[in-house]
Length: 553
Image 1 (cartoon, rainbow, N blue to C red):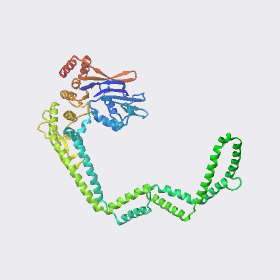
Image 2: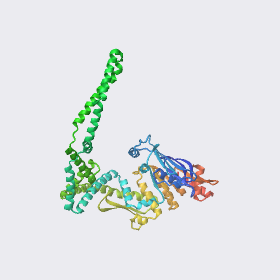
Image 3: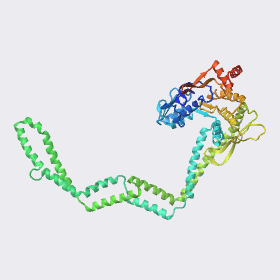
Image 4: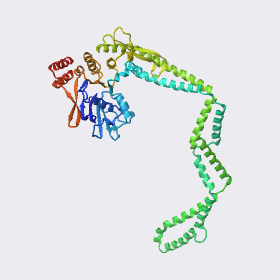
């Protein structure tokens, strides 16, 4: 359940911490007091779009924090793991969201920063929120099918069907494109063959371009390399004043010095090494110069290879690797065009096999839906009777689709007849807004055991019902409170009196400052609030309030 909700600087709220209990929670207050802020705060927690105009006047940011205590965290932990976060500890989930006037919004889960998408993914498992117009979702056949499937408990089977359906449609689309495309002309085939042959004839090898460019650099600069080698060897060993001759003369002086004073030998160990290394260097340079061959034919061959590679790069890719990838794709296209008949036959067989898988799984879905539809309708009708529709008719009618669709072989359409003697018609054509609210509550009640979302929020869905019906609505919400935490924002004392805990939203004006607060009420305070909702502070209103509380007890 939601254990606490903390709101700071959101609209009229300056700083409110709301501690919540289990069961049905009633929220009341005068129009304009700020009850809708609770829903707004929860929507922010659930990752809905943030409007900076909600920030309290004169403040830079608003913050909403929520703590959920969960008995089963498997679904939540899966979302957290996918986001790279640690799982819940001891069933606690803390969500915080800050909306800044500067646009630098932040959101955290268990103190770790997350994206809005993570909040939305978590929200699907945490809160089911219904406002005055949310019953319109009942008009959607797709939403109705989701409700039936939830009641049927076929989520796993539906997932397998959808995976098979996707594979089938992918193969069918590929087949359709191949069958409906124009036959490749001989010119197209010739072009592909030319491209493939041109690349294949070059016999490209990965990495060869760097090696060829290095060899070309040496061959193209052979004369200069020989000149540089001659200059080096000349300075080292040729003519008077060469470095090596100078070292020999220096070596004789060092040798004479060591004879006179042997202790100086250690001073000249580095000199001897340098003399040896320079002599070896001169030999290596000479060998390198002797090996240099300025071969015009080799140079032409290298230049031709470089030209070939550059030409192919201009046509088919920036690198040799990309050119080879182009070749592979060209050969695949060519094979497909040249063997078009075989490819069509292969795809036709694949489509047939995958369609068989879809139909097999689809029939299993259909069987479970056919069995569950009358049971759901009967249970919804029972709840509708509790909500004032004593002799109404509710049906979940299945209709076979012309072809398998993403969600199965059929669609469902909820039919409703609120009054006896009337034929049932599609719910979207027959129910008023007040009736739709009660139908929504009846459906939610029927799905209560299958619905794993812990918190249900009903925001004034009783707005268009009468007093006696309001009590029935309240009792149905209280019944849902046995398996879920339920927040009912209501104007009806009949609903509020049935809540296990009751909170009142008030608006205080001090000077030019307006603040909304939410406070728990019990005993005499609760009687006073119910009396206010009943019409005033007259003794008759208080007596009526007491009778409502007594009846609820």
